[in-house]
Image (cartoon, rainbow, N blue to C red; front, side, top):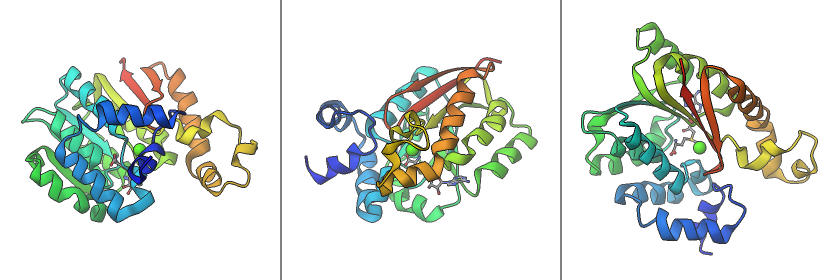
Length: 245
Ligand code: SAM
Ligand code: CA
């Protein structure tokens, strides 16, 4: 397995590295847009192990297909980083579609921006530098309720549950809110005091940042009567919530 695959493997929950590699080699990489590949590679080069923040290749392709199947036109993206999922979204939208994206980190967005420009879809993107909570509340107070077909949430895990409420207003009935990393490196299957978190700095970090929040979110979403939800074991876990009313 080359270094590239080692980096990618970490964002795939699948417990078979051989199968993960097979999926990417056979379907993921051959179907990856040139500029998406460019962002993925530039991010690995610049951010090293932090590049695992880019959504997984196969997961992003799944989301792009979903957007096309839904005929999505207006979407929201919470958490942009270098713009891998953002570019995939913009490519999947029609020419008059729009993705409104928020992230406090403009510097990371600008790392992917040359590729976004090269892909010729910059006109479909509006990047807002800021924090998601005031941004979402502002959209609600500006009367944007029911304006969006889809929202991709991939930011600070502790706040996902807070983002759900304004998103339930902003995404139209029949629209979809997608929460990323809802298996949180597989940690959600374990209680706080499990052996799996002991003597492993990575797992300890995962436990400290988001483990409890994602577990609470998963329990909450599974019983929220306003949505139909499904937790998929793709990428690092992806929960799709379809707004019922
Ligand atoms: N969706 C991106 C992709 O697939 O390439 C990856 C996003 S990365 C996992 C998480 C991002 O969330 C970071 O860029 C971080 O700056 C952003 N973030 C953290 N806290 C945030 C907040 N309160 N509001 C908006 N974005 C936030
Ligand atoms: Ca993610």
